[in-house]
Image (cartoon, rainbow, N blue to C red; front, side):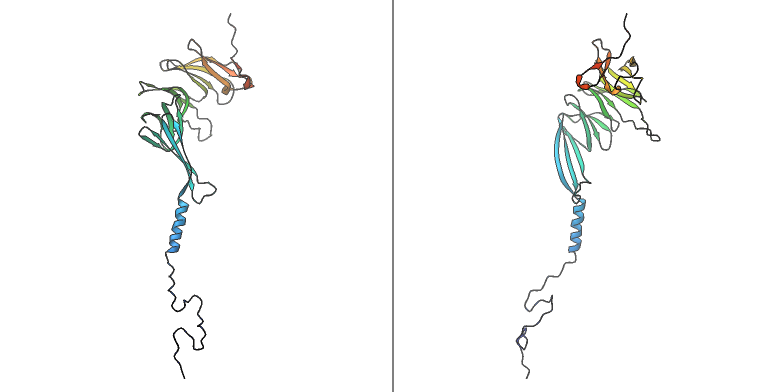
Length: 278
């Protein structure tokens, strides 16, 4: 005789054998896997790969202005091959992004600012005013004071041979803080190993050949008289080269020079051999 049995119980009294993965009687339904979970995980991994983590954050003063340097790297780049530094200058109310080099005047009133893309800028660090715009990658050769300097616009080497492309020197000075006077001091095929500002907007400079050795010439420059030869070094600089030259000005406003001798620790500077004055 067939007997009815309660639901969920086997007639023998033994519990029913359930298949793996099948919920038992009265168990809450198992949540179905969400098909978008894998896509969501992929998006999170992609965002992490494309995002950047902060490595360092520092600020330096350039006169009255500040430059903030933020170094970041990609999240998944543990070898730091993707790191970069983003630098922003704040001068007055002006923000200059993409800064990679600055050179401040002696008291920090002006600064030459090179940016990653675009012209070099002569900036008033207090107000942020742009006092002059110069060719990209211009460098400072000499600060004369807070309103006067000698700069060197970039001259590219010859593409075909890779030979030295020459030198270019420009003198700038600001009259009354705003009016910019700009003049070319030298533009030609020779090296300019040394530059020194002089009185009344004059410049002393040494010119040498591409390779070490003579001739090495000392010049005086002024806006009204141009480039004037002062003296030629006689022969080679014993035990050194044009990079050992030290320029100076005499009390009479004439350029002078000497060459440091080794060992440098002795502080000896030897003038050129000159004919005896009778």
